[in-house]
Length: 116
View 1 (cartoon, rainbow, N blue to C red):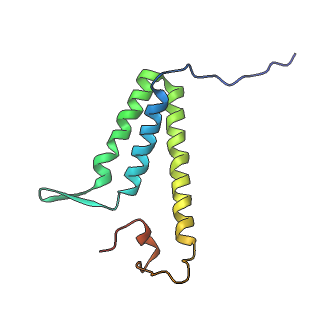
View 2 (cartoon, helix red, strand yellow):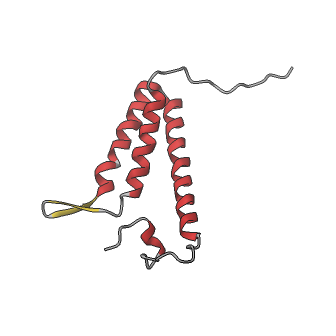
């Protein structure tokens, strides 16, 4: 006899998709703003250091409220979204600039950073 294994379906939760989308957005934004230094008193910290810990709160919510399957789903979506963002960023750097446009940036890394 052959037995077919079906993937385990997650039960439908009302707020899960919205929370996963918010988690992915916070994760991507924290990766983008990592180069920005923010002064807090005499201390200068990265903007991502203030934003990234929020993703841990989301991870706890996913695990405790929605279960390990939902937590894995959110983490994998965030991981794949980060890969996609990095690939698109590398593609944008790789693209040649059009002829006739003004090149205001002297190096490829300035695609993500504001020129000083």
